[in-house]
Length: 71
Image 1 (cartoon, rainbow, N blue to C red):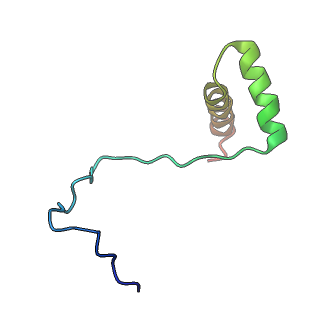
Image 2 (spheres, rainbow, N blue to C red):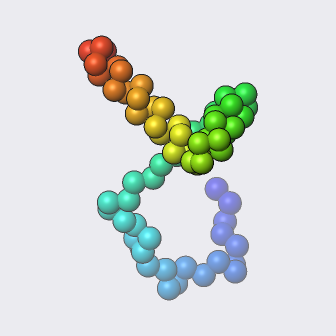
């Protein structure tokens, strides 16, 4: 482990200052370029964001899976 540089001063640091117990982090989801282009085009035609369109499509898929009893 490298020693800390002398210009790092943690003497006034506060442990847990940025901790939020109820914080939920959402990681990025990467689409294949061809799929992203197609969906972005469809979203633009519908006047919605790519995120809104993808969420709508995934919600419909979830409903179909639940109806088919494939949980």
